[in-house]
Length: 270
Image (cartoon, helix red, strand yellow):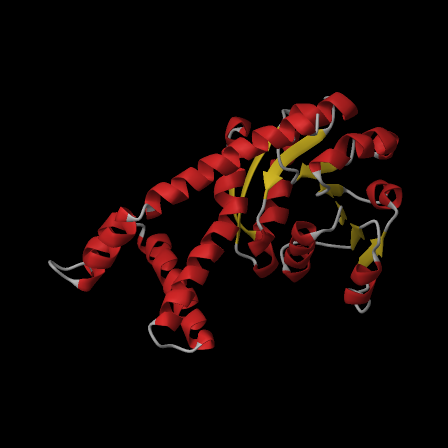
């Protein structure tokens, strides 16, 4: 299988690293395109499967699966310019582009194409992405191929396309939100007396432990909180102070604000 990633920025590079680390994909060639591909060529110079190039036409025409990871404002021009290089008979198109709906691709390429809309996050680079996907009617026949590729990046969930914008906020933007929470925990630990490396290790592992409890035990966050808090104890005192300062409210407002921003992006990039 030949795969191309058109627009290999931070997310595209994370996807590439996830694909290359997978033993489940029968990868022959991986085409990575970028306007100035020198850094990609240097990074993957010892990997014979990777072809880093600025030639989108070459990458698309040579691939069985085309992963589109360009900026939203670049998509229309790209599809208009390279329309004839896509092959509806053999190709699967996977989009990772924020705010672009399946109908936007069908408007340029036609309804005969197998199109998957997806939203991985940058944890794909370490095989821990939460990727939500949806498809058009033609894409349903190849959704298992998409799942096989994207499962190399972490967990995959098939959802209705109407929920993709929300999934973008929760999963893709969510990486940044969780990083900020970990950073704040690290700063708090430093203020309490730990060196920065120790503080970060403690914050990261504690965050991982909390997530693992929910993932492996299948419980509810409040149930796990109840196991930690005791009457008149330090944990409930700290939690209540955080809530008084608006912790949960701020996070929810941040999610909604990011969701609204995507609406603006969609309008500008039409």
